[in-house]
Amino acid sequence: MRKSTGLFLSLALAVVLGGCGTSSKEPVTTGAEKSMKIGITQFVEHPALDTIQKGIVDGLAESGYQDGKNLAIDFQNAHGEMNNTISIAQKFAGDQKDMVIAITTPSSQAVAKTIQDVPVIFSTVTDPISAQLVNSLDKPDKNVTGTSDKVSMGRQLELIQKFMPAIKKIGVLYTTSEVNSEVQVKELEEAAQAKGIEVVRSGISSITEIQLGTQTLVDQVEAILIPIDNSVVSSFDGVLMVAEKAKIPVFASDIDTVKRGAVATYGIDYYKMGKQTGQMAARVLKGQKVADTPVEVSKETDLIINEKAAGTFGLQISDELKKEAKEIVK
Image (cartoon, rainbow, N blue to C red; front, side, top):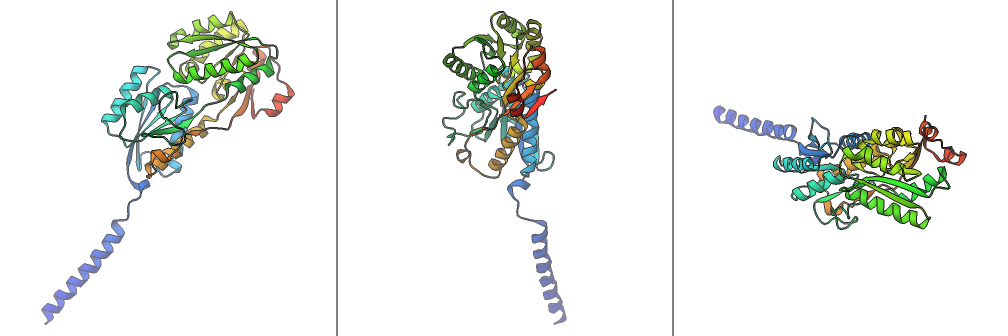
């Protein structure tokens, strides 16, 4: 009897200890606790895009996905080369990433064409429909969604007029291979036509043509507007050098380019857009379907003015503009 009683107690103790071990050592795994592999691809290096990348990482972290803990981020930069965007997309496909985040239109197009079996989240794509990334902003029908940085070119034109009321000719420097740039140029032309202003185009195929393209414009126009164009913005110093010598004011479509020497813009806070993209990516990682994740278009723009640049080009900043500006760069 003692022997069988001891055996019964031993078995009962084992069951109790076994039950305690299961509850404490094997918690239910949530989406945020699962280790995920994400690829981030960026077309070219410049301050605005670098700011977006930081915002994406911070947005993911605030949503429970931290690099080095439950997330492994593989960042790749195409350095402005279209062929590199394809190679990066192929690499991510071969690595079997759980998600790919693409910064800019060229990188997004390369990834969307290469990867169809995992979510693709784009950031700063001016016109996702024209870029053939989605058929609908409200209900994406594939594995692709993201955030758009579309700003009103008509409003940028009105801003230039506030500095130069009598302007009749505006130049625009853009990359012919970037769909987002072509869309913006057409919108600018439509807005300018309604105001009786002529738009002079200068299209480039690579950053090596930046200075020559700018020189072509300064001989014909009264001011230059830089759209949200990755190649041109990345080589803005070359634009500025030619424009300053010719005393032709340069206006931008993003805040960072104003801080680098353009006169002014109604621009988007790209860090906020990056965080918005990261938070969207996190929701998809946690199980939200891409089809139920509409493209988000930023509707907030801030007036940023570079006081030194305005002075360099001989432009006055009115009291009205000073009051409206969120920031005046000294």
